[in-house]
Image (cartoon, rainbow, N blue to C red; front, side, top):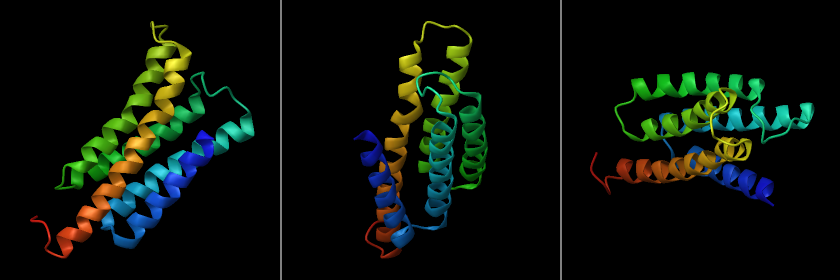
Length: 140
């Protein structure tokens, strides 16, 4: 069920962002969706346990994080900070789990997907606000 909910929300986010969002929102949506797809393909092909830290998923997250960080540093808006920070949390959890910290594999597995829902929700809100700003309904 979570699988279908997640991808349905992601498709809704893409539709909203590409219909009414600005260039920044579209770029962030492409990056996070590409990371989601890359991760899903990895788990489907390798059959890996999603509750265990996976180096290939870490590499996908690091690439997406680097791109999001560039977007954040170039932006004059605040919302990219949140997208980038939320994408950094699973990277931190990967290293904490590998270091043998007290974090359990289950908690690490949850952090891989939990923040994605916040990213999706934020991109929808930002796209709506961008449209409102273009229509002069809210100030810059």
